Image (cartoon, rainbow, N blue to C red; front, side):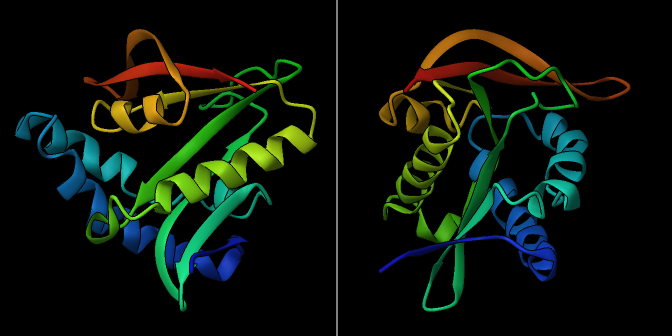
Length: 164
């Protein structure tokens, strides 16, 4: 049985390790090696402020970390806050635990949390790999985008949203 809890400061290293292990394996089928060499060092690191925000969650099974992710009112990159809109942030599932309901459990928890905060729409910037997952969770693709990760690093993604 999966449990979901709020992440805390001591969890940063665990989330960091999960991202560093899972993202290269999960993203490999959908991104060119040249893109991954540039992007992975930027996206495979835990964001301490996000992890300790109170709206970032861990999915565990008997203490083993199987997934992580959360939401913020502000858009990624310090963007604007729009009343009634939340933003899914830095979601990851252990590559050895995909298709076991980890991601679904996490998103269901996020939806319950944001709904209690008055959020009526969730937006996310999905990797190409995660588009089918988010579609299965009720999100609709709005448009293809690139996420600037640094000079010369434009990471292909898909902007998606779900009304609650």
